Amino acid sequence: MFAAFDDTDSTESMCTTFLATELVKALRVYDLIGLPRLVRLNPAVPWKTRGNGALCVRFGVGRGQGQMVGEIDGIPIYSYERMYEEADRTTVLETAERIVQKWSRTTEGASPGLVVSEGKPAQRLYWEAVRGIVEKEDTLRELQKIGADIVGWEGGRGIIGASAAMAWRPHDRTYEIITYRSPDRWGTPRHLEDGSVRDMDLKYTTTFNNYDHRTDRRAISPHTNCPVLFGVRGDDPTELMNAVFSLRSETPARWLMFLSNQGTDDHLISAEPTLPDRSYDFKATVAEAPRTIAGGHVIVPVSISTGRLEAAAYEPTKEFRELVRALRPGDRVRLFGELRAEPRTLNIEKMQVISTVIERQKVSNPRCPECGGSTKSMGSGGGYRCKKCGHRNELEAESVEVPRTIVPGWYEPPVCARRHLGKPLKRMRS
Image 1 (cartoon, one colour):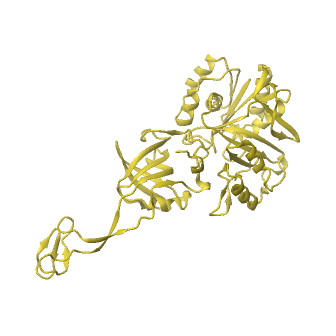
Image 2 (image 1 turned 180 degrees about the vertical axis):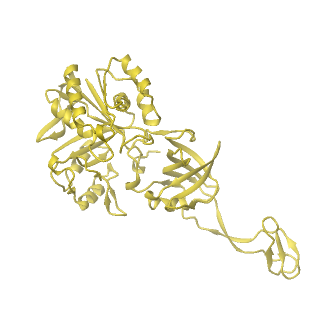
Image 3 (image 1 turned 90 degrees about the horizontal axis):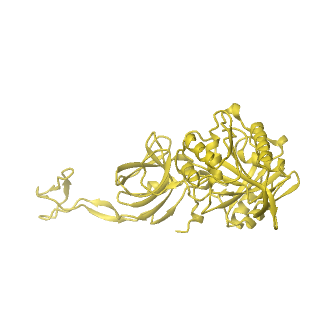
């Protein structure tokens, strides 16, 4: 029996993943079938809270050998790949409804949604929700087809995300272990040794987005007063568990492993940008030299088949801006990022420089071909006139090739500026 929910937190407190641990705790009479799923959705939607993540958990009576995937209040949590039978639908629905209602931050703007079903909705709900904007009515029609139970609060916008999480059939996947604090420590400074995070990042190479080595800052713990202590992501569940338990921190009250679409680039549409509030993967040609605007943001105009588009490396991307500044007109690039409506710019998440042009720097005006004297420019398109004899010519100025500071290859922002769904270069296979 699947139970999925979304939009339970606010920008300042709670975390939807914590409700998953509460649900697992409350339904210990059943087993986890597969891993709980943490599914990130379109990062460009205007109404998202923080990570725009939805949760889906499946319950039943496990069959075969269980794998330990968490611990809550000292009690191990096991997951089973197969099952004898589904959990009782009414029990799951009533328990999930009680938990979502209890923990959701509806007074802070949350609009929670809960979906309980024995079967999954159409896979298209996931792709539409991770790459575009979904109408609630369309989701409800699909849920009615599979006979799902649906509960919403304060408008129930979370029904859309919950359905998308339930509909996800991964073609690429990662894992995340999230640890949680004791309630009496919520809102207090987190104790987590940065040095242990740095060492973990270097030792366990299948993990990613843990630590910014340039600024010596960890990236695995939130900045809000939510229940999360830290979360570590990776490709190998066994190594991920070893990585988590190598960290030196306050003792977590609970932890749980999630299957996730984080780091997969599922949000990217392989096409030139058209509609705003969506993310794209496309090729372009640099049209003008980059410029820096107020706030330290770097803007580079590029040409695509439909005209020109301004792409931006915003201040939080730090040194990545220097790479964008190094682009020159004529360079061919492949850009990944979100198209904003106002101003209409593409927020660059990462880029591939496909080819670069030769850059030349003027050394001097040409010498007069008649007398060898020095010449003076007559303005754009006007050629040069000899200062000595007055002869005019159309020769090119003398120049030298300037070494480029950027070469063909892949480039990404520092860890602190990456998105949940963005695939880090260490996971890129092509």
